[in-house]
Length: 355
Ligand code: MEV
Image (cartoon, rainbow, N blue to C red; front, side):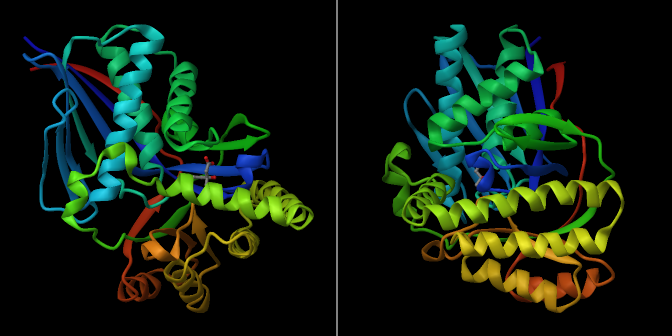
């Protein structure tokens, strides 16, 4: 009988305070009902074989020992290669920290409902689920706080700066508030939201020949650009960052008190601040404006945002109010992948099975 570990984690939306959180300001995020699953099982040959079985629009297989790869009909090769970068670094980290996995034959299969590079936490979800699955597979202590910390370290190694917010949501689910780097779990009522994602411009299949490590990571690039601008306009950025901090604090109260009109208005203001720091590309801006015009209570970019030169890849989150169906149709016409999501779902779930 072959042991199989299945680790499943949720995607996230950052409701308030992305980017500002990297500098210690408050941010609020919630799990959403889209999940990523990593399965770890044994394989006869030594070394790791990673198979991205399903990610919306993509499939990829790679032998991490030989480097041999098989890409299936692709849409977003660059983003899938990024996913592999997180798996590879998780494996390396676990070998270094816990001495596990060396020489073993392990099959890793990833199945995901989370669009890649869309600001919905696919990188953090990949790290948390890979680390949790491999720890369980090799019988290493699976304490949740340690898994979260391990996953955050891996994210930082791959992308430079990474606040703990994404890995916290993938681990704990529900809602988390991060302030000055400290993670606090909050118990708030669920919200029904609409998420609109703009996918990346398909890149040439020639990318397959490039080394994975050479490929740009979108979040890393955007976070670095914000840092550069912050250094130039220090006092102005400090003021913007403080306003964001206040918005997040008020938003928590608005959710607690079911004040949805206020909550929506705070989302709109937060979006304006994200635009001010330069992370709102044209196509995401369009989705937000369109939602606001069609009567949404609030709309904003969520996650890292996007870069215009990449076609504005990323997502927006909308508090729809009464305007839901109309709004979704209009967002689809504008080229978005549109999802109804519910916040506050379950965190990391591990199952042990046998084939
Ligand atoms: C990415 O989902 C959110 C950012 O704030 C980066 C981070 O918190 O690590 C842009």
